[in-house]
Image (cartoon, rainbow, N blue to C red; front, side):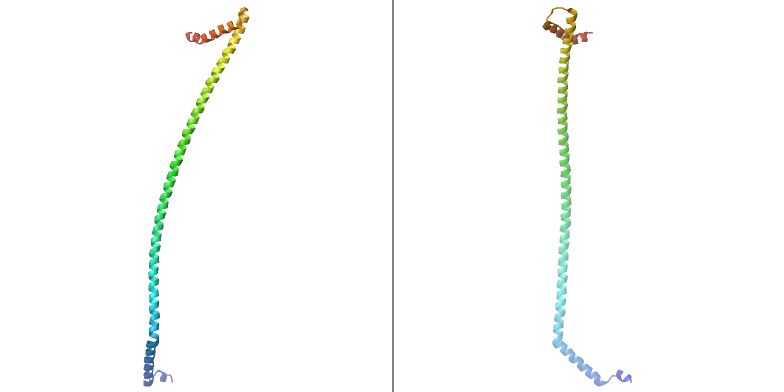
Length: 169
């Protein structure tokens, strides 16, 4: 029963060949050119996409190279700016130190002058006090009628000679 279907018949073979040739002719006549046109268009689109991809990759590589170059330049600029900042900070520090030294020298000199002035003032006051004490003591000892101006002159002369007396002894 199943063997009849597997057995080839000449009529079936002829009609299959005729149908195949007719189908091939119809496909060639009406479908082959549009199918080839679609395949060619698809091939062309793929080629264009590949070329665009290649151009985009080249552009990306150029952009990457420019970006790296700009980064290197930015790093150099940053390093230069930091170095300039450090130099400026060092210069300012030196200026501040010099100014502080000058101000401290002025303050020390003013302090020294103030001490000298106050020392001279204290010595003068001390001389005045010593003169007064000496006058009072001399007045009590001598009990004479020398006026105060003579007493003062005598004591001041003595006090002026006092440092010379110390050096001779």
